[in-house]
Length: 199
Image 1 (cartoon, one colour):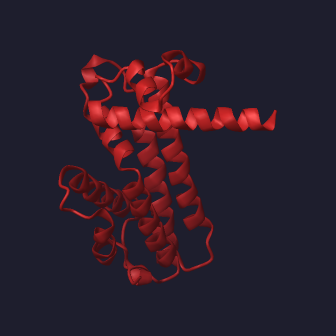
Image 2: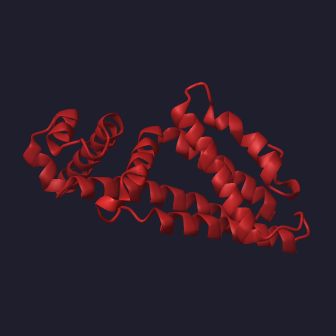
């Protein structure tokens, strides 16, 4: 029984990974379940055993990224180091995570930039960003209370910091000459107040 459950989990992950590759290569709107099945090396019916639709595949991929991101945010919030250092560590971890998730980042950009007049968006990216900004703002507020940070408005500074990370991500996605992780320390020096910037 345990091996069967493990096999099912592995097959589901194989299909999900294949879906992300197909969505990144073809674009979400043009991708078909048949394409995902071919990429995963399974029959089309096998995909439907795990996922009811392309939208469900997309949501599952996004939820996986959101869970990995949430873990990074939780680790930063729960650490014992000064808040500014935890914020710097969080920024490093987020950029490293995004660097490993290039295809999924391309898919999310594709979905976000699609014609929103065609209907409701399949993902709640706004909620994702609200949680992200809230975690950054909490660390900034804590750093200010510790006296280790320049006076900033935590919510607005958090929006600027998250926007800078996303801007770095966008440049990396559209210009192969940009190295995402190489932008980490410059970004920290500019936007993480206090003693968070040194590696």
